[in-house]
Image 1: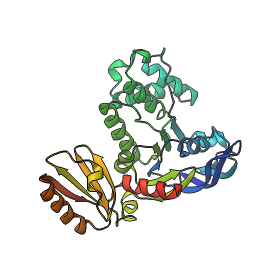
Image 2 (image 1 turned 30 degrees about the vertical axis):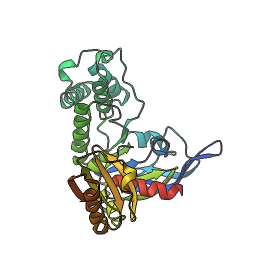
Image 3 (image 1 turned 90 degrees about the vertical axis):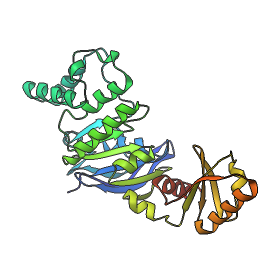
Image 4 (image 1 turned 30 degrees about the horizontal axis):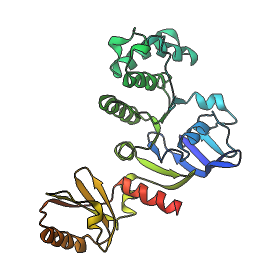
Length: 307
């Protein structure tokens, strides 16, 4: 049995199609990413899967339960961390977790034990009696993720869980996501952070304009555009991207202090770069060829869809 099975799921708002006939399945123990720009339909998809929104057409099963026909049974299986979630700021950290435990009907002794264990895991045990209003944004987000785990879910929905957080909180939350996933929990992660999806996800569905334009393991997605190689070059003196758009180069992007040239024939472009450096008296200080990354896949597939 799948953790999630989605068939022909569609959501329209006053004639606008936010999610357009999508189908996919997620296995237990899988970390599945919904990757796409803002407005791609990721959050609307999550809201349908968690029973917040009713689909216009299509079905979504959480385990064996149709989320529309048996919402209570389905919701017992899931933990949810929405993008705009908030803890109760006038309650302490531990009281927030205990309240969630009460809502799920967890026996008092067990919910206290569970709350304390989660606070230790998230590095907040020493601050367990402090009101959440005194916490930093990263600490608040850790509490919210911990709240989503109070009921020992079989599926964990995370909607942009690291958006806008400090580096330490991002690292901790990513490590904990991986740790819980290793215990067999299915994790459904929505993100517009391509590197996050690349680091964490077993499979990725790329969404754009409400449709799934590709779905596969990150490494397999990269191989689908293997012909698009890039050359990364750094010159001793500043060079504007427009100066090195040679024949056979489809695009030049500035990446830090380097320039990245996209081409299908790097072996022909490298000699041209060397010749340019010699004629302009501008020394090349580094030169590398790069295979496609997930960002290249994402940009190519979303651009193709828009065309």
